[in-house]
Image 1 (cartoon, rainbow, N blue to C red):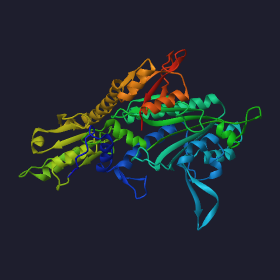
Image 2 (cartoon, helix red, strand yellow; image 1 turned 90 degrees about the vertical axis):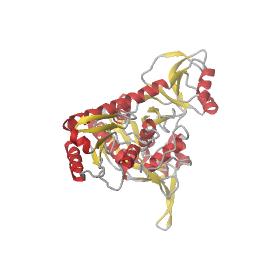
Image 3 (cartoon, one colour; image 1 turned 135 degrees about the vertical axis):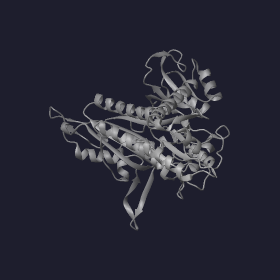
Image 4 (spheres, one colour; image 1 turned 45 degrees about the horizontal axis):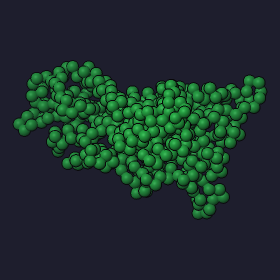
Length: 475
C-alpha cells in the first residue's frame, strides 16, 4: 500500500523527506550525510544533464574530467578560496598503508586543479577562450544534511573558462546564467529571479557571483544555480599567462559556473502537493501512464490489447503501460500520482465501446476529460505542452503573490520576522547591516535582481540611494 505522506501544512520538511523516500527518488546511505540516488531519481538527473549538456555544447564548451584528489597546497594558493571552503574539506592523510608526504583534499570544487592544468595549456592568445565543463561528484563535509538539498557528497556540473578580457568573461558568466534560467523556467517550470550576490554571499574567490533564486512552496528561497566572475584571482595565483597580439604576457580573466542535484530538491518543493510529486512533462521520466481497468466478467485480452495500441500510438512520448494484475486501479492511481506522472490515461470496457478514454492531469486536482482514442496521438502531446506552461504560470503567480515590498528598516524586519516569502527593498551594501538582518530574522540577501537597475531611497542608509534587493529565508 502507498504510504500516506505527512501533510505539507503540518510539517513541510517531513513531507519533503517522505516524498523522496516513498517515490523512490533517493535513500540514506550507511555513510552519514551521503545519499543513494535511486533509478527514478537518477532518471530525473539524466534529463537535467541531457538538456544542459547539449546547451553547453551549443555554446562552444567541451567536457573534460579532472581528478577527485587535489594537493592541499593547491587549495591554499587562493586565500579567499581556502578560507571559504576550509570548514567543509575532507582530507586524505594516509593511503597505501602509509602517511602521505602531502595531504590530499577530496574536491569541494575544482577551480584549483583545473587552473593548475590551465597554466600548462594556456600559452598564447590563440589558446583562448578556453571553455571547459566537467560532470562530476564533489565532497563538502556538511554537518546538517538533507537529501538532494545539502549532502556531504553530491553530483553536479562545473564549468571553468578563461578569456582574454574582462568583458569576455562577464559576457560568458551572464550567458551561462541565462542558460540556467532557461532550464529552470522552460524545462523545470520554476520561475526564478536572476541577480548578483552580496559580498557576504558571493563564492569564495570570486569577484562577482550571479545566481538564480527560486521560491519553494513553503515560501523559502532556494539558490538553484550560480555563475561566477573570478577576475584574475586564480590566474595570478596559479601563474596562468598568455602572450597577447603584441607578444606581451597577460593573465586571463576567468569564470566558473555550476548546478547540482539540488535541482531535484527544487522540483519537489516548487511543485509537489500532499499526494506527492508533480513533475513537469519536459523532465518527467514517464510523461504518460496508461492504466487498464479490468472488471470481473470483462475480456482482459481485449482491454490490454487496446491499452498496448494506445501506448504504441503515442510516438515521441515517454509512456508506461501499467498492466500489473496484482494491484487495483485505485492503488495504481495513487502510486503514479505519488511519482508525479503528468498525465494518466484510464481505459476499460465501456471506454472501448465508446471509442474514448479518460484522461487525468496530475497538476490539476480532479481534472478528468474524455478523449477519443483516435485523437490521442495529437491531443496528448498538446496536453503535455499545456501542463508544462500551466506549471510555470503557477510558479510565477506564487512568486508574485508572496513577494512584498517595504520602504523602511522596521518594516523590513517586521515582514521578515512575521511572514515567509520574498521581501524587496532598496539597500546600500553594508556588511554589518546585512549581518544584523540575518541575526534578527534568519533572512539573507538572495540577490540584487539584474532586471531592476534603478536606485531609490534605501532602507538602511537614510542619506543614500540604494539598489533594489531581495531578502528571504532560504535553504
